Image (cartoon, rainbow, N blue to C red; front, side):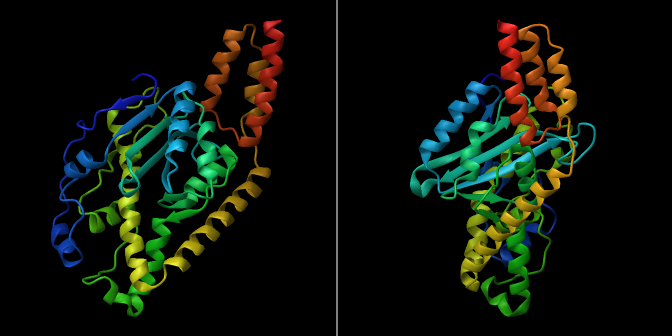
Length: 322
C-alpha cells in the first residue's frame, strides 16, 4: 500500500458470536450494533500511514478537526526481546468518531517502522482532547519511554469497568438491569455492551514482519474504532451510578502516575543507542546514513536517545554532504 493509503473494509471475515452471548446481551440493554459486519460498514474508514510526508499530512488533518476525544492503541513487536526496553513500537492507531460534532469515523494507522510518529505527539499530549484507551498502563509506558510524552487526559475502559463493577456489585445493580459479573477484556466489553464479537486472532500475530497483512491492519483499526461507542456505554453507566466525575479523575491520576514511574525506570535502563550510533558513524555516504536512520525505527530506543541521535545525524549528514 502506498503513502497514506486507504484500506478496504471488506476483507474481514464474519466472526460468530459466542454461544449464549445474544441472550446475555438481551438481558442487559438493546445491542448498539446487530453484527460485526454492520459495525464494519458503519464505522471503518482506515488510513494507513507509511512514510514521513503522509504522517505530517495526516496529523495536520486530525488537528484541524479539533476532536474532543481520540482513541489510542499501540501494537508492538519483539526485537531482542519483549517489553518496552527490548521490543519495537510497530503501530500507533488513532481514531476519531464524533458524528454529533460533524466528525465522521476515521482510523489512522501509523506504521512506525516506515513513518516518523512525532507529528502526532502534540495530539497525544493535548489536554483538551480526551484519550480513549483500553488498559492505559501499556500505552502510557511505551509513550513515556519511547516517545517522550504523557498521554493525558485518559479514559481507560479497562480501569473504568473494574471501578464500575465494584459499584454494581455493591448495591448498584439497578443502574444496569440484568447485570452479571464479567471480566474486563476489550473483547468481552465489546460483545456485552456493543453487541458483536471482536476478532482477536491477530493479537498473537507477527508484528515485526516487513509488511503487515490486511488482516493485521484491520485488527489494529478495529481496536480503536470500537473505543468511541464503548466509551459512550461506559460513561452512561457511570452517570447512572453518579460516579462519572470520580471515574475521570481517577483515570487521569492513574495516567500521570504511570508516566512518572515509566520515566523513572527509563533512567535506570539501557537501550540500543550505542549500537545504532556506532553503525551511523561507519556510514560512508548520505544514502547509507539515511538507510540506517530508517532502520533504527525498528530498534529499542528511548525518546531521550532519539534526541541525541537526531543531533548526531545532523553532524554526520553535514560531514558527508560537505
